[in-house]
Image (cartoon, rainbow, N blue to C red; front, side, top):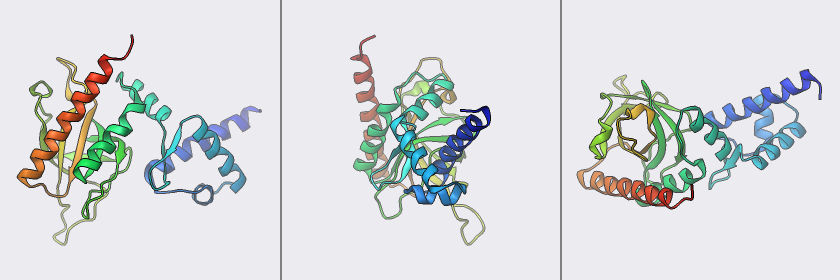
Length: 223
């Protein structure tokens, strides 16, 4: 392969990852149309990226970034968490709360990772790599408590008053590292349009359940 051909392959690889992280696409035809590449190239590229676990599909068949891609992102962030374990955890949270669940990191914003879209009528629509503007200071990770904060979704439609409606975010570190800031930890998050007190208690219970299960499974892994 020539250098020019190799660079073009890398560019297309990158473009597909960006596309599936921002738009709901299921077929090679949609990818070819969005990226203006030959259909045969789109078929071959998607098949190879799925084989390498750089792409995967959700329950509805939509393309998502795969476990290998997420693992590279976690490693680049200094997080020693097996990416293949994250999707089952967020799906468990989604299935038992009906709300959208995802992993995230806290920088100056909350940056979304692995997502399981909610099944409730008014679930929050969230995409990988999406960001939320948090309306609160960085929580205290050492508290061990589930935090409930308000955040603004930059993708949400503005209300009739010209303001975006805050989203309730319930957060808990998946694996708390003592003396480590929240922004350097991986968070489990459940997002809701509005949360009742009983709903918040149930979400907190499920978040605690998931993090305990994760810690038990990690402790059983061989070194």
